[in-house]
Amino acid sequence: MCFKKVAGKFQKGNVELKCQNSTYKEKKDIAYLYDGVKMNKEDINLTCDSITFFSKNNKLESTGSPIIQDTEYRLTANKLIYFTDLDSGIAVGNVELLQNNQRIKADKIEYRKKSNAVSYLATGNVKIIDSLRTATCGLASYDASNGKTILNLKPKIINEDRVINGDQIIAMLAQRWKLKKILKGGVVGTQMSNY
Image (cartoon, rainbow, N blue to C red; front, side, top):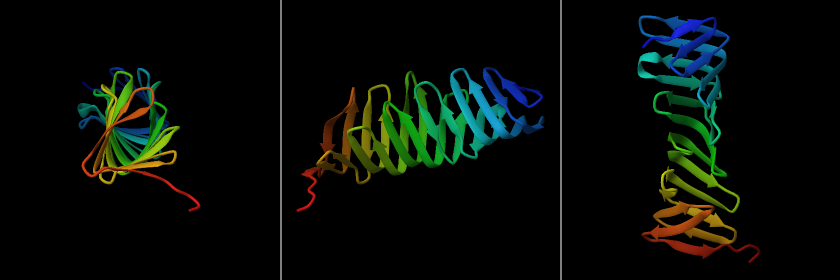
């Protein structure tokens, strides 16, 4: 299905793209949009400096401080690949995801919107911050369907004066994080200051 271009506005199904400048390659069905780019799809909004929209693949590549958000989450990165038919994407470089009163930072986040939250796989320098604790690790996954977060690659949770380490930490998100299980070689310690 091709999309229509109308004076700086492109439309494919329920995906609407707006920009100040654009180029469209009809044979390849690819649009290049730049300067004040906005994408709207139902309640999802994306703003950035430029988008390459691969219409046949329902994929857009966004650069220049992309910000994608809806009523449940907000994600920022250096580059974002978004799959319009799946409500999913891959964010790379200085990634920050805000949802469920948490801030998730990582080098890369692969995500998929499920009902009222985003399930994700975060890799590289992962930091998950909420009002009570901070978790760090090299790899974190969150499943929105059951509220389970799995931390791998040197996971650590700092909660007030306690530190939890292990090879793998599994936590459940209900109202607040509740630690479910620490697997293999886990250590719980107390932080001390002025000793």
